[in-house]
Structures are given as structure tokens and as C-alpha cells.
Image (cartoon, rainbow, N blue to C red; front, side, top):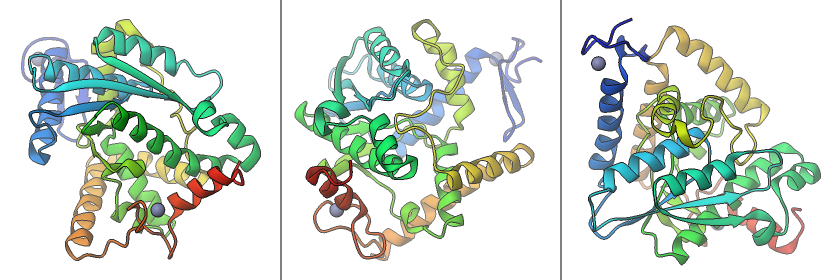
Length: 305
Ligand SMILES: [Zn+2]
Ligand SMILES: [Zn+2]
């Protein structure tokens, strides 16, 4: 199949636009979307120090590569990468993260669950079961990322969140009756409150992986999806994601619609002051108490682990 913009061989098909694109036109299209997200949210300003959350999977590698390219000629913007080793056994992610940081010539800072919290994610899963471990992991990961970012003077943390992730989270929170989680999304990084930016928020996950394969192919293996640092989803979220994936196969605009709706609802909730947030850490409050602070308290006391 040929590219719709030139005669070269296409490497990407976009079911939602009906377009086939060659590497040159795909990269152009991809980077234009990410730049548009950054511009429209005012996510890059002179003097910024952007710390990329570099887990070592395809999406995070793509994000670091893209931001390094975007800011290469900007002396007024500093870029660094932060990797958190949650202690998931057998994951090649940390080594890939190091290779990407070196390839992009950015400062690379690492933190580890074992050092900071005295416990790895593998141990948390063993002691508390996968669902509790995963919920705690998300909070503890963002807190540690934020701490390291703050220690190095970062002004924003960049996350490789895709349309698929936003749509999947929203869909499963709808189905589980916990839509307030999505209505009050984390615009900040853990309890440090450093603003979070998501340049790939309008891009589907398969295209982010394709971008990583095309641009970062020399530095790691990006074809298979590595498990995230918090080891996947709970069973309800996994079922919701599978149902949504199947539906999207025939209705390719569905994930964009869900992700847009989540953003619109969040905007309405914020404008109407419907966002109940924790007085201590600012996280959304779910059912009267702050989940995140509960997890932090349990970790400090040693009762979670
Ligand atoms: Zn082309
Ligand atoms: Zn709190």
C-alpha cells in the first residue's frame, strides 16, 4: 500500500482517518499532533526544566526522543529523564531506559522502591495481592518521581499517556461506578504537585509504539508491550480494556470520543468547583477520605506492606 501523501510504501494505517502513511509523513503527522497538544496547553515555556517519566517502555522512549528533538535547539529549556525501579523481576525496562537517556544525551536520574520504601512491587503483590499493590504502586511511583524531579529543579514532569490509556481508564471507571477518579485527573505529579504534561494525549497507543520502533529502534526492543512499572491492570480494568479494544476495531473513533468526553467532564467539574480534594496533598477525594494519603500513611507505618 502506498502513502496517501506521496508514492512511498506506507508503514502506518490510521483507521480513524482512513490514511496510509509512509515513515516520513507518519513522523510529520505524529509530531504535529504532539506539538499541538503542547502548544494548546502552554506546556513548554522559556526556563522550563522538563523531567520525562522514563519507565523504559516504548511510549516513554518515544516521549523522550520526541522532546529531545523538539528542544534540541532550545537553550532556554532543560530536559532530563527519571526512571523508577519498582523492582519488577525480569523486566528489561530499566536497561532500556538507560540506553535511551544516553542516546538522547540527557541527565538520567533513578530511584528505587526498595531504597525509598523498603519494598519492591513484587513483594507488595505477594503480601497484599495484585489489586492493592497496583493501586499503591501508582501513588508511590508518582510521589517518588515528583521527589526526584523536585530535587533536581524540574518545573514539569512529562508522561507518555496515550488516547488509549485515557479512554481505557475512563471507560473502566464508568463501568465500576468510580467516575470521580477520571473527573478529577491528576494534573500534577504526586504530593510534590509539580505540573504533569502529556504531549501524546491525542495519539493512539499503536502509533506511539510505531514511533518508538522507527525512531528508537537501535536502543531497545519496542515491538512488544512491556508490562508497566505497576504490573498491569486489575481484572475489571482489563475486561473493560478488552471490550473497548474489540468495539474500537469496528468503530475507530470510539476511544477519541471517550477521551474527549473525559476531558470535557473534567473541565465542567473543575469550572463548577465540583472537585473535592484532599486538604493535605490535593489529590481527589474518593468517598470522604483521601486514598493517596491513606496509602502513604500505611507505608510510613509499615502496615500496608
Ligand atoms: Zn509519504
Ligand atoms: Zn491526601
